[in-house]
Image (tube, rainbow, N blue to C red; front, side):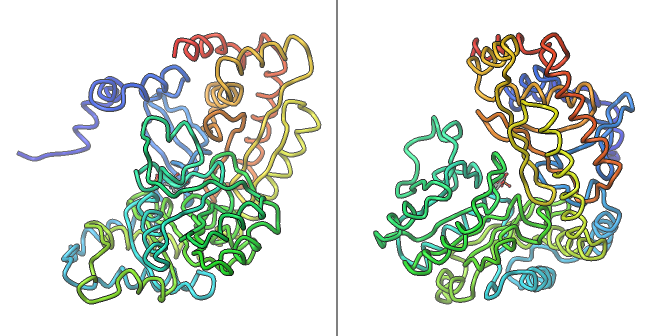
Length: 459
Ligand SMILES: Cc1ncc(COP(=O)(O)O)c(C=O)c1O
């Protein structure tokens, strides 16, 4: 009997939410229904998704930055087809596969000086976990420093360096020896480093949760302090890397030379899960220090040829279509236009970002009645206003965005790097309309506030 996935999808399309409620994450399926994100998606291409009614949505979520090239990029798609047709001997394991070598070579070419040895993982957390192990192996020290608001994944290895209490709660005790330091507090960082037991300081040069950006002198100075005190300096580029901020790596905005860089997300072109940890040969060799330790760290699907091929195709497209330069140019325009809306809307406190990684932060309004609505929402759940804006953008403007993190009044835009002037116009005008609506207490933006407050209080 033949099996057709297309037939199966055609027969069962529409059952996704009941299936998820029954067999997967019931809570998540419920939240999606509450916030109006329970769409039946029928297709996606480039920067757009469309639903079962054929309505088109602009995707500024990009699968959490997996689709830097947009969905279904023709070159990556063609390479995936080619790989299947080539029927290469994938995952032999006791060999040295060609494509992993080629992708490592291409990545190293794009790194800051001295980063010349690569480990391939399966996800962002996997890549960060690997980085932490490299740092331990290289220094023999037990402690790790991380930044407030940091997000490096949700595995048991990366949770202890997560700056969000919401994620940590319920899983303690976490791995000991992980200490938060505050962004821009160099004295605090030095105090910790001076103890001489720190293996690594891990940073996202531009943070994913909240799009927080340190002051210009912080990261170069933090790097210098790490060198001085013998700690490994890790830049987690899982979200901000791969051209998103207008440079291949976000740490290149400050000309940093970290000891380890992590990548994932759009390296797989939206088709394959993949992660990469790129470090110095001297650090790499400390982990794989003897012939009998050559597999002391490994993962079955690392170096999977489909993922390696997707990575090579993605890097080719980034160059060919000058997408990194485009992210810088279009990002500048979008950031400038959104920032200009601050003059028209007092609830916009800040618009910040680099390239096409943009955060918009809100603040309480002055008008008494509006302020009361804001306060009621905040009292029920911190950051609820940002959620209302995200819901309005989806419902009224057909634009997919996300809140900037739990408990913050920030929304985050991560458009595919292929967007142009047309999308900039759409985003700015939609956001302007939603903020105008938000200033009217009886308008659409607040219409679901009561329901959200009820759910928040019930919880
Ligand atoms: C900066 C950063 N590091 C690590 C991760 C974890 O990646 P993954 O979800 O693939 O495990 C993320 C995920 O969003 C991230 O943004």
